[in-house]
Length: 121
Image (cartoon, rainbow, N blue to C red; front, side):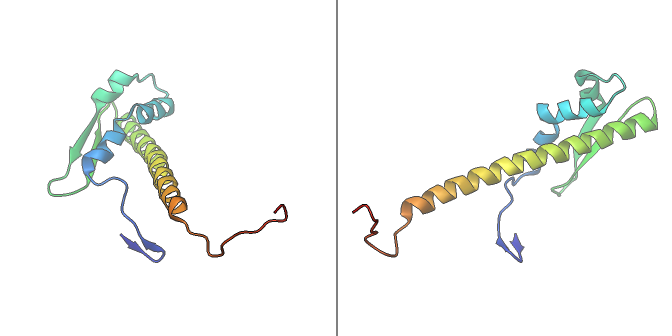
């Protein structure tokens, strides 16, 4: 992907990798904290379905509940949890990438001025 600041690749390449984040235990925990109407993990997982759009890298999050308001609340909480865990995972991946890149650059670094003299010599 090209940006005004340079090019980069997305840390995840397949829609299934993003769907796994929806089903991530940390994301589900965030959702359950947000839902205060007595929904447990199993009930929540039964009430949310993910549908990949044909020939696309997009997907639907479909929530069901006893009322439209509860379904909306579950879908909104699912999206909030997904976005939060996506930020965490991307941040971790970016940090690891730059850490490893900086490590390689540091090992290949050549000083411009040699030898370096200090007052202790």
